[in-house]
Length: 327
Ligand code: HEM
Image (cartoon, rainbow, N blue to C red; front, side, top):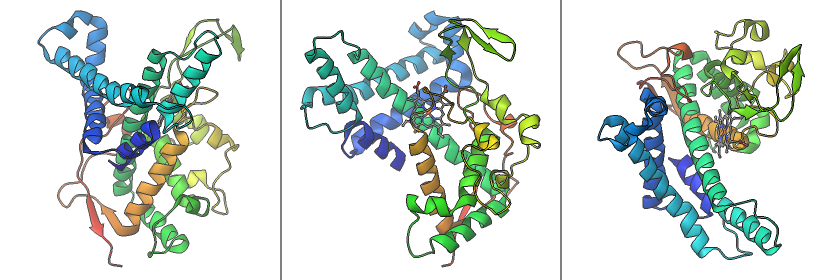
């Protein structure tokens, strides 16, 4: 939930009130309900279903309504109250670019429709992906208690127990960083990157990708390729550490093969924010709680091949225990 509030500040420059949180959360839930159960695929095949009083149509209409509420709150209200020179957040800065283009008398590149699309990209791209990466890392920790201990020891050594962790602690906590990278690799909750288009003919290792071909990067296959990782189906954070326990540098071949956030000029704009949030959430939790499997039963598998499919993979609902540490 605090991530939702952060997204709100980023977009509008103000702190969310209860109603705002409700609007964003409803948007997240409506999108989620749309993509799981393959509602989107059903509508690609039978688009007329969106008008009918059937489940697929209801989910579609709920999503459209939630989207309209979000745009009313983040686009219209910002546009109505925008004052040049007093930009409050991302939407205001986009409005500033738009108004400057207009003042120059040049052709307008940033239209209202494009700003609205960006608001949706940031929301839809941002919330589900971070929520799921946190669900995944907690599930893995429940299955790998040695990893919880490794993170906890690092917190004790670097931060202690009397203050909260901060982003400044990250460089001194290589094991925690490695555990986050390994979760993002092992689970690969965004298995396919955004679709791209080749702007010209390209030759790669004897294959020609013709101009205007759609290029789809299969991150899942790269992240589970035995030729790169050796044992891709083993969750092993230490693969991202060198012999001295330091985090492998970003230019190392293994880090270069980690494409969680895509690559190149159209890679994920939210990477730094996402990795910072995951780090802070995880370390604050492990500092105060031990993470354990449920008391009854063994819980669900942490193998992503058993997860619910979709554009964002997610584990089935699971139980776990967070036991307060005695310190
Ligand atoms: C763990 C969390 C996240 C993961 C795994 C993730 C992953 C990705 C991937 C794979 C792409 C496509 C890159 C490509 O095709 O090369 C992407 C694009 C994008 N992501 Fe993320 N993302 C995450 C968090 C976020 C957050 C927090 C935001 C917003 C604040 C965000 C906003 C976007 C946007 C707007 C794009 C489209 C960029 C463009 O087309 O230029 N993402 N993300």
